[in-house]
Length: 263
Image 1: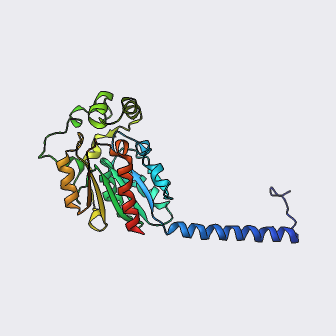
Image 2: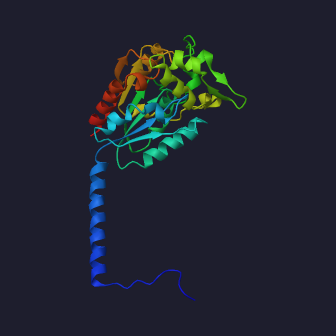
Image 3: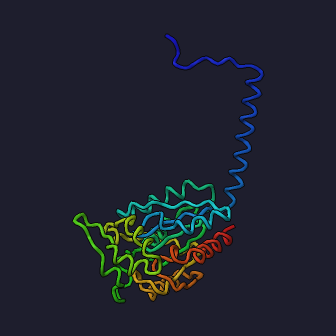
């Protein structure tokens, strides 16, 4: 019976070619080792969004030679989103600056316990403590306007109607952009807001926090309380719930500060 694999005859030239290939791989490994010395940035988006929510910030980070990965959350449970974030973190060559927006803050609070994560950046985000669920936070404050307008389908997934997204989620971006954001938003399972954090990574990692002072999805007062609780280096922006869309340069600047501090 003939083998399914062809026979190779090795010559002196072939041997030289293989040695050159091995040298090339060795060189690639050295480059990879150098890359691993620089922290990567992994971004975890929030509810009513997807990874494209960060399309304006990502090029600003890449222009500085930073490897960036935007996680695509299933938004089905805290455990599922944490698993997605950890897969992205696993694929990084070295240390990671983990960024979370809104619901993504809850995700990075848990996923940030990964051994590669060196620091955390919260952008208008929840920052629960161990044993807390997102739904437990801010109950003593008025319901934000955007949250009051959520639409929940028969499967239990919440989304924002286009008018609500334009008025309360991204009121400081152009109307056309808000329309695209409404079309690409990721509905979130309402039950996810009841999932509790087991271990809060901000207790063992340095943190940065961006407060959006015109946020209509999370009360700015609650954001300030999170920043204080986690002892974060805090920046306040006069922005909507999505400063990454309306103030990308300032958001990128904060992330770059976290990257520089992680070297």
